[in-house]
Length: 436
Image (tube, rainbow, N blue to C red; front, side, top):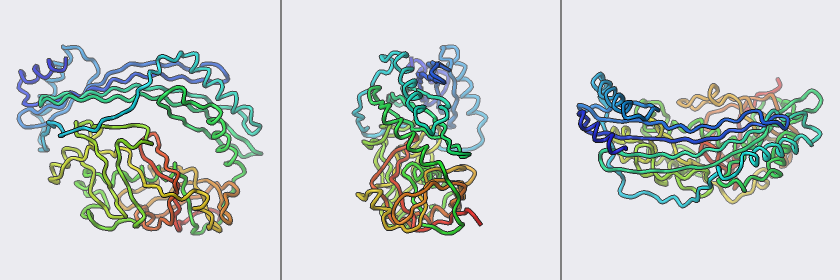
């Protein structure tokens, strides 16, 4: 089928054509008060055509895959190219010399009955409800996704990758006096048997109970420890600074700083598409470039930008396999952990703050300057131990300065669902806004 589209595009006058097709099959279930609240199943294929016409690159996207519609979309692609006034590199990639092999068995979640999946949610809901601090479970959700991506172009490149996974969680509502908090533990699996209800319940209850009874603290600079999940959020909020697009548009502090010390010597940021602990293994990007393990920051020294085909051409660099969704994104970017346990990392902190929740990661972050000011909550650290809950505080500082003041990094590396990973991190000092 795709070869016929290529031939049709050539016949109509395109010099090059690329087909990027994503078929996404999904199932979503929600249980509320032991009853099935929603059941949504979908099977959708999206296609992106990238074509070169009269030396200009144009893009169109559509869902209806009929031959008539494909012909119409090729015509539209040519019309769009004719109207372009901006001159950008018109590149259809011929392929990398080699591609990493993804060794991962794909479990077929459709072999598990819907009844079994609903029972999983009912168990999760009922066991969380058993705890005396839980007033209700807002909902219990199950989602499974099977995504197959195919890239086919006129230069003979034919690639495919597939991701199959499921995740589940239940949102518990916890109450102590007038203090009400919510908590949940998202579990992502590649095989249905890897769901562990008791572990998910334990983690959810532990999170919820630890949030109760929180109070603010005096405004002061404090030693601050971010949980692994929250420091992943911080890294995620600033991933654009490593993008060649940001460098091209002068929107990154790192412009002209390749080879320079920009963070502390204990900072190693690595982009690893096949990391064994990551949720997703990615052999090639959306442009057909082989993904590769790269040190973005090595001992605090900036090694170079992430590039797609366009920015690689502009900067006369090799593409790095980071072209996704028409933009530039990392592939399993993580902060390298150490062998230090969490308890050992905080044992010498006399009066500090452990941050487990952050609010406002979009509005409260300025990626160009690095400044951030975020609502936060967590636990007080007193004499090297986690103590009472802390709420109604604001943590503020500068990301670039903070990355020079990392006192210690723990061993508890964890990847989030977006592919960013981090251990827990101890910052020497950050301003905490609380009570006057």
